[in-house]
Image (cartoon, rainbow, N blue to C red; front, top):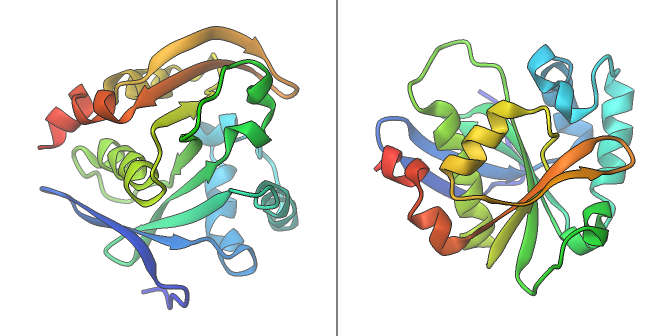
Length: 196
């Protein structure tokens, strides 16, 4: 069990899986948890492959610097299982490639490696993150910019109600798709139906 100091800021219960809880990410304490995650092969789109612990801390100091950025470590049964970044897309490079509206929030999510297979686990994490953006942060739309080669997240985004805004955009570090999802599209999505 991990001794958590900051406390739970958001909680979402998924039937058959349990309660996912969100706590503010504390770089000096939590970088050691996510360091092995970002170095996993499946996390290559996180752009931190072969990073040291010092690299991860330095990157998260940069990530957390812009106004409106919130980074959370997510738990299931007191075990850290995911990381999410919720941010103001107007502060990011994608703002030059999409028309933003009041209430738009950006989101990234990284699911940690699991020792035990739990059916629906990744979908449960994703749904919980989306609910956090809508319910805790009051988003009207969620904007994401996954790498064009990340077909697994494209499938998950589509199931969650995301629509492709631009199919291929060159950013400084990668080529991405820009997708957006309104609250009603998420609430009526195949992902939410599969978890009810």
